[in-house]
Image 1 (cartoon, one colour):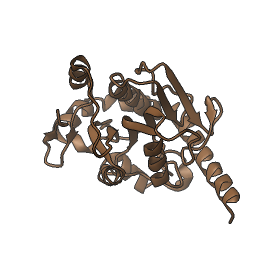
Image 2 (cartoon, rainbow, N blue to C red):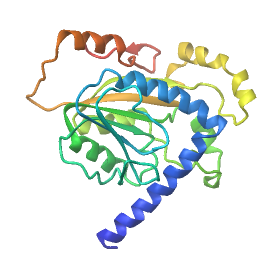
Image 3 (spheres, helix red, strand yellow):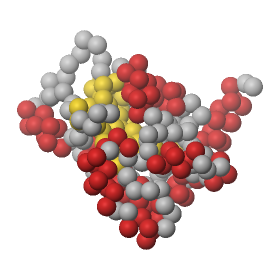
Image 4 (cartoon, helix red, strand yellow):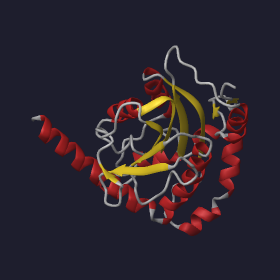
Length: 258
């Protein structure tokens, strides 16, 4: 297969998966996940400053709504994006973007490693990367194991565990600086039953924090030998507004470095 055919094939797979996911997010079950993720992306991006911010995929949903960078746009193969492109081949100059958000972009990509490498390439030094994904240590993963691929999104996606994602980010020079698990209720389709299990949200955060159905993490691109000096007011805002530390397996919470 030549390169042109490979790109066309990869684009077709990506487009189909992402369109199906967008349709699922409009269902009661998907909205249950989406509402929480949008709130977490808002917290993760509101203290990120610069000139350019890009959202890869899901153009029908604004995952940059909490950010105040002047030039924000969505890049995707689906209709409605400001720029039609595949996250595996970003048509952006190297070190030209201050913020990249990837809402479930890795799970629906034929090559999640390449998506991360492209994000690292286009990010400025000290640029921020925010990623969401389905947790492999959760009831949602258990539901996936008992679902057929014909069940559609998100059960036909390749869930990526947080530990694996952290390893990938570390190899690319990223440093995790915040994150959170969420959505502990059973993965039910009926909105009434989802409401009945709402009590599991607080219980999950308290007793089994690493078993949320989804996660949102933020990472910063580090460049060896470079340190940017920021105003004290900006550092203080970052401490107050950034995502919480990542819960560990023993139930404790590791805070990000100050």
